[in-house]
Each structure stands twice: as structure tokens, then as C-alpha cells.
Image (cartoon, rainbow, N blue to C red; front, side):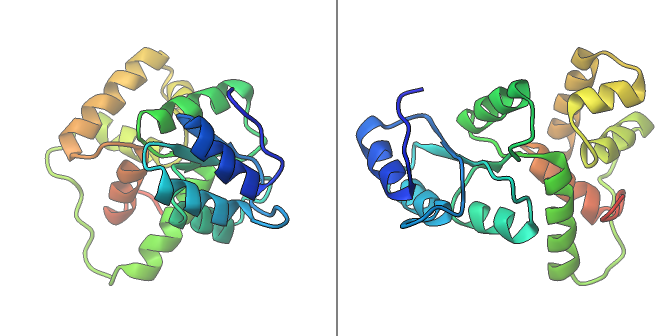
Length: 189
């Protein structure tokens, strides 16, 4: 930890001065300069700085606003310390760190609103296990998948990595989009 800001304006100023790898934007509804606008300024002015927008308000509009502002993720405040640390690592690597429960709702809403109805196409050549992993990615984290499959976390990680390569995605967010577009999962499942 290299700094702590009391509001959005100070977060922007400290980010300029300290150049952190990842900023945890703790509240989107701050006085003077809100967290969404602060995120927008940080990501526009400091492209190497990643932002995670933490909030107790996991409403879709807050998630969308933070992500549109350039946030690299939106973990809710009720996640464990370990999940927060992993979210920071994920954002630092340049991937999206959005809680599965938020990601599923968000992508479901996006896919329903922006895609004309057509016959969904499942990625070609998926094995039964790969199809199952893709559906489970849209519903939860690797530890949850491991529990569902009665498999070790390292086995699940290997399956997920292999699946990402096979379907040509770089992160969970893109994999969830593929699962929705292929109609393997539906919003609210």
C-alpha cells in the first residue's frame, strides 16, 4: 500500500504522484469527485494504473458505470481478504476482476439487450468436460467449480486455461460471454 485518499479528487492526485500498480476505489458515491469520475480520470491520465472499484452497491448500473469509466474490475466489499488479494493480482495482470455473481447478471443483461436473436453457436470441438467447465465458469469461481466437480483446484485451473486457449479468450469475462452467446447458460441461472 503506497497511499490512502479521503475522496475522489485526492485519489486522482495521489495516483498521479505515486503511480500505483492498482488503485482500490473504495466508494463510488464520494462527495466532491465521485469514484466513477475519479476512475475515469485515473485511467485516462495514467494508462498503466489499474483500478478496482469496490462498492457495497452491486447494482448493475454501478457496475456498468465503473467499467465504462475504465475500472478493471468490480469486486463487492463483502468478498474475503483472499478474494480481494486475488482480484488485485488479476487486475495487475491486465485481466478483469468482476465477482461471478455480478458478471453473470451484467453479461446476461448485455447479451439480451444488444444481440439479435439467432440460433446460438456453441464453440466447435468442445468435449463434454470442456462444455461443462464453460457453463460452470459463468456461474462461479475456480474453488466453486472444483467443489462442483469434486476435483482439485489445480485440475480446474488446468481445465480453465486449456479451455481459454481452445475458445480463443483471454479471461473469465470473455469466456462468460461465449457461454451466454452459445446459450449454455441463461441469465438468472
